[in-house]
Image 1 (tube, rainbow, N blue to C red):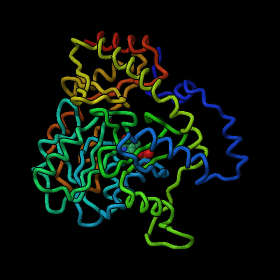
Image 2 (spheres, rainbow, N blue to C red):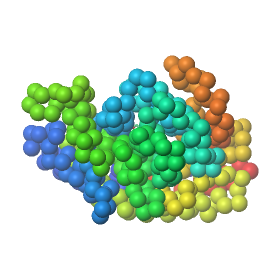
Image 3 (cartoon, rainbow, N blue to C red):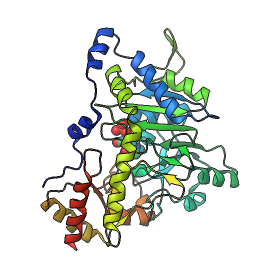
Image 4 (spheres, protein in one colour):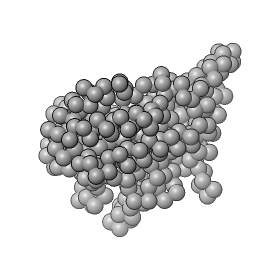
Length: 372
Ligand SMILES: Cc1ncc(COP(=O)(O)O)c(C=O)c1O
């Protein structure tokens, strides 16, 4: 039996995408900034907004740009520090570096693998301009606790940006990931919870000034015909991607349901085994993007990975960075992140997506148990 980590062809078959929409887009002759994009922005806004809080969605070319545009919207640049975690997809870090700011890494909670909020006060400095919260694997950081801490230490000047690339559809205390901060960056990279057939991203904010600025920044900094108040970049979603995403977002609740079924199957199967699943944050309702287990040591993780490969099961590691991988970052920061380093050695991501059946999960769990 062969189980791929992520078979995008099989996953997209599950959606039954109506490809006649490609002809429709072709016939409009309008391939950028058209009706599909407008519709998609409105769909995301509707999905995220609640009765007392409506925001703005500004689409862009990918999740990395969404992070960069968010940072630029609040003028973060050279000399500023942005606190984030080191166990994230590298684009979180590259976005900070791209605006000239310095990433300051905070260690993680060893059970949720998310930012350890208890350490935040220690790492704040007069140069801290923003905190980039990463809702890793779809699990959610308790953003309200971050805000409480900033209030307590009189640092409400610090901007909170959520990196929601992995957590579209996740909630905490009933609030959607992306709605709890100043700005939130989404990725619709093909493997994500809501994935295009190519690159796509978006920023969500409830602040109309930020929204206006990002709309200009993503479009050559243009605020009117040939009027450029900002330097700007070119970062647009194209109509074909927006058309696909408009279809897929309609099915998001059934996607969440199927993922929950598979997640429960793993949870039941692995109960009592020496492999812990990443712990869910209190009061969170994650739409899991990845299913990550932790072995007791790096050696066991590596041996298990090899055994699963022999069983035909593809696995990955999210993420195994050490400072050695980030060669251009002259930094000894990793030495101060013991939990991040330890987790990077023990974690293993198992196949987890809507193309899988419960019987596939049973097979994977059975293979894991046979390794013991
Ligand atoms: C946590 C995180 N942030 C940012 C990104 C960047 O998104 P994109 O690949 O769409 O640029 C990704 C996806 O790769 C991610 O997982």
